[in-house]
Length: 220
Image (cartoon, rainbow, N blue to C red):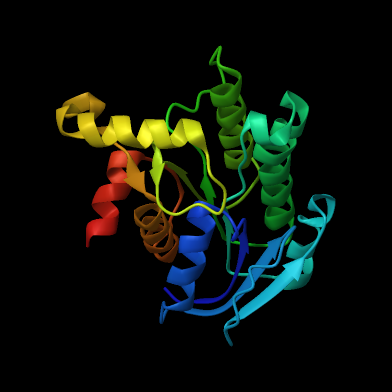
């Protein structure tokens, strides 16, 4: 399936940056509209970069009429500054985009969530991600792909000390994570991006993919 136009949210983040590169180099994607608070600074004939305040992210969907929407929005509680600010980025924006996309007739949405996402979790982060998944799935879109990566590897624009410690830990213990623990292995942001594009091109129905499944999809 060809995608004549796609909209990408979060292109300045780790997964979003890799995904933008994959979209640019894909013969199956004709045009990319990147929407975010900051410009991607990527100059390419296929890419249009639109800078907006987050409150206006969802309103652009109706004007764009894309074939697919990719949402790579996400932050941390520490970076956001409060639970409320974190929830706005990781719950409110993706859900608002999904609802606007459904109203506008968009067929497919691919969303980055997190390993362990669960709307009933006692952990605020995982509960927020789970609630986002639940409400995006219920937004009325024909095709929804939710990806749940584990610890992400790759080059970030900002340094995160806790994640660097986690990367070291995962590199040491990844080989011991087999069977039901395999989905907790660290995964490179590029692999997540490759899987997202491949899943979007053949999207049919509503599905959730765990981190180990993404790694397998990205191999081929």
